[in-house]
Image (cartoon, one colour):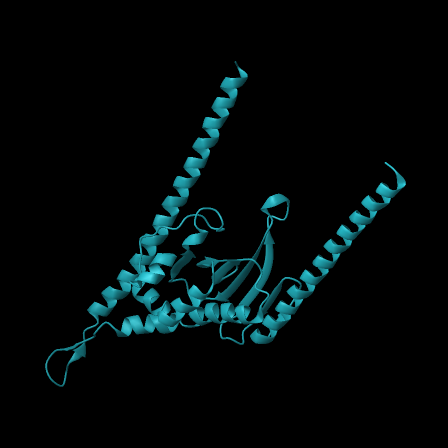
Length: 266
């Protein structure tokens, strides 16, 4: 290799390395700027990856994360969480464009619909109890969800029960980050209200003679028990599905091992 060609190659590599460094620096600056803006909105603080606070009601967090940081599987995600009251809600909404590989949480049973044709066509829903979920996923909330190109919204347990929204890519735009935080915190903050509304929708008549009538709450009690049973049925369905997936995975490994052994033995 002559000196001129060597100089050209070295210069090109140097320019490429400088461009990579510059790109990473700008990317890091944009990330920190987005986290600072989120911390201001939440009335809280931030570190290099997360912003948190409770100015929107429930304690909420916005995290800019990278999953599977090696090889071609490296992908950036935004995760927004908000604390939930109690443990009586199961909710999972997932853009159908995320089904089949991009989502982080496996499959979704598409057995529930809200009766909104456009929303039901765009999203897979698995949730309980539905009389509460319909109040949480009202028309304005469905419109906010549809704003995002791809989204997964789930109830989960970390150190506490939370509502988590995951989106591919980092939400570096302040307006989009604000929408995501307000959406998740807004849903989480209305859970108790939605339960109260569902309970109030069940009539409690007065029975008995005049002047000694007493409320008959049997229908309300039955409705509350039905909600609890609906949640437990969904959780049991998910456990069975997880066990089936594990069994299928183990079976696939055993079949592969048998084929490899047979091939090795000739």
